Structures are given as structure tokens and as C-alpha cells.
Length: 225
Image (cartoon, rainbow, N blue to C red; front, side, top):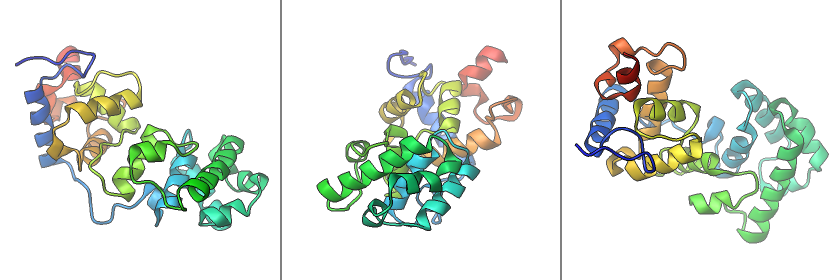
């Protein structure tokens, strides 16, 4: 089988990538009917804002910040009625609160002034919003709009590069390679399979390689086993 070069992916061939995703589909849970927007927010606006708040923040701190913020405002217009200082005070638990408060107000202005208050449903549109990068855009696309996108968080980035699905130093590059290399049929649930695999088996420390159902197609196991 022809191997992928590092410029476009990891050490696995296209046939091996197909096998990996088929096994993930067999062993790991996919998208569920209860999958909601980031941090379980009920609408696209709050999903985008909560994803913005989650950057470099622990889940518990993000949850505290979103609860406090959305107790004050839940729409772009209502958010702009708050001062930057009021927003910063509400989201202080999540860290980088001054920058995030500034971006939240800028994001609301863009939504209202340029987009009629509607959150975009494309990656390009979402990434034009202040404070929204590819990771956040893809998470919103996948969870909120149920698009066939493999969103790359810490778990997915680690697992994809450890196995050899990708060869990338950044999560954004991992996302680009997965978009290019993953079979089209696997893109809807790929994020869910990989993240659950990363939490249950391919954990950060002491991955369970000996009993892993992918160890015969894993670059890490081959190199260390």
C-alpha cells in the first residue's frame, strides 16, 4: 500500500485509514440524539460565545462563566447593552476575561451589523467572527449545526497524530489533514469516535496499547511496542 507523505497526512496509507475509521465505528459511540451545542447551550449564539469562552479554560471554569454571563444576556442585542466591564466581571472564572469580553462585544456587533443577527453555518463565516478560530468554528458546525466535520480538540489532536492518521504539530493542521484524508462517510461521527477513543483507550498517559483494537494499524504502537 502506498504510504501518505508527511506533507498531507500521517504514516498510514489510505486503505489503513479506512480500516481505522471502520474499527472506530464498530467500537466507539457516535453522535447521539442528545448531542447539543458546546457546553450544552440551546442556540447557535450561546454556542459560539461559550466556545469562545472555553479557550484556555477548564470545563468547570467555562461552565461558571457561561452561567454567569447568560444570566445577564442571551442575545447579541442584550449582550451589547452590557458594558465590557460587566461582561468581563461575569466571565472572570474562565481566564483571559478582558480579551474575551472585548471579543464578545465585537462578535455581537458583527452579527447585528453585518449578518442580521444570524450565526453563520459555514466555517469561513464563523471564522470571520472576532475570537473564533478553526477549532471553535468546527465544534459549532459539528455540535450545533450537525455538519459532517471532524472537530479537533485536545483528545482528537493527540489520538490522530499518535495513530498516524495525521502528522501535525497544531490542532488546526490536524483538522486540515483529517478533512483531506478521512473517508467522507466517517466525517459525521469521526469527532465522536476519536474523542471517546482518546478518553477510554488512547489516553494521554499510559495508553492501553496492549488491548487496543487498533494496535496493528498504529504508528505509536509499532514504534514503541
